[in-house]
Structure formats: structure tokens, C-alpha cells
Image 1 (cartoon, one colour):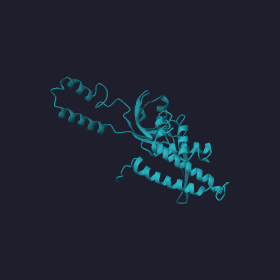
Image 2 (tube, one colour):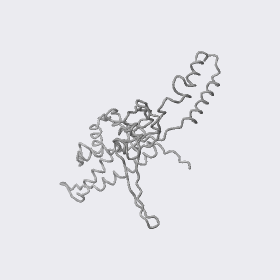
Image 3 (tube, rainbow, N blue to C red):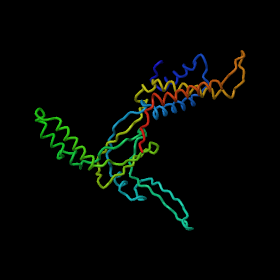
Image 4 (cartoon, rainbow, N blue to C red):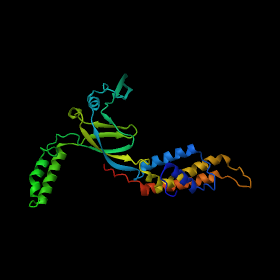
Length: 282
């Protein structure tokens, strides 16, 4: 079908673009499965439609708190990463041992990036809970909105946000999608069981849940060229072999054409489909 809605539809679409069923596409099913996985991975990591900004909430457990509070090397179920390095100082051998705390929470593999976390406690009297300044101000003034000066109200709320920003620092986090762990550099003494944090993150758009991914114009074009290059690579070893009727297989030409297409697609990815990196300011 012209609009693939599944993995099989996408593969059949790409084969038809390469000439099937008129031509035999000499690529094994196992090779095509690998190429589909590679194409989806590239789509998720580079294409702006491959991920979806989302907010996830996480509820702390006692195990999280115990692991975060424990001294380095004594964390329960931590999977500690330790390393030892040796150095020579003034003729004496010195051994350095490095240990890493396990102040992390486990993150689903579908999360490929985390921007920040939102305040995890309710102790901020400026902005949170029913005893906060903001809540009381709104509660007392909401009935007089018709007579209030909205400019003064907006300026007051901005001032409260400034106080909140100065007194409540953002929590430092460290995340790498290859380890699926979010390290929280916070004071676990202030964390209670069943407290929540909100993660501002990017999640993969799963094609099994959102089948329109298989119909993405870039993904179809990219996978077709990948299969074409694999086809040419498979036929290179038969270079110069003539088939009945004098037809000669030219795997090198197929491979080179596919590589040129992929180079053009990569350039289009950088210029059209990929979000530009943020400017780095020293």
C-alpha cells in the first residue's frame, strides 16, 4: 500500500520502489530487519518528529531514598562503579580509588533525553501549598478581579517568581540514555516516601503505538536507499558475471548510486529535519 501502516508494509513499499516484483531484490529478510531497526534508530535520534516532548511523574520509594542517602560504596542494590588508578609521585606509588554514589532512579529505555526536573517537595512557602503567598493572594483577590489592576497583579506574581527562583535552586541532574539512569544531585534527607518529581523529557515515538511513523516521508526514502545499498553490496561479489542473454550484474554501480542518495539524504536531514544545536556561549 502507498501509505505503510506497519513494519511489513514499509518493507514492501521500499522493495516496490526498488523494482519488485518486476526485479528480484537480492537482500535477505534478516538483512532487511537490521536495516529497518537502523533506520528507526536514526529517525528517533535525529528527526524532530522522532521524539515527543512529554512530562512524566515519578514517585519516590524507600529503596530510592536509602540508595540516595547511603555513603559511596555502601549503597543497597547499587551496582557500584569503582575504578582504581595508579600514579607515581616523587618515586612513590600511589593508588587512587574512585567510587560513585548510586543516587539515581531508573528511567525507561524509551526516554532519550531529560531537560530538567520540577520541584520535588512542597516546602516552598512562596509558591506551593494552601499556606503559600501566591495561594493566599489569589484566594483573597479572586473575588475582586473586576476592580483589580491586572498590571499590578502580574507584577506581583512576577516578583514572587523572582523570590522563588532565588531561594529555591534548581536540582542538578545527570542523564545518559545508554545507561537508563537519572542521577539526582539533591539532599535525600529532604525526600519522603511517596514524594513526586516531574520529569521534562523527550520520549521516542513508538511506531507500534503510532503507526503513522511508518509513513514518514523521510523514513521511507532513507530505508529504501539503505536496502538499495545492501543490495549492491550483496551483488559486488558477482561483478563481471554474465547472466543468460548477456546481462551483466553491476553491484558496484547500485552500491555507488545508493551511497550518493544516502549522502544527499544526510545533508537534507541536517538542513531540514534535524533541530539545530543551541549556540554555545563561553
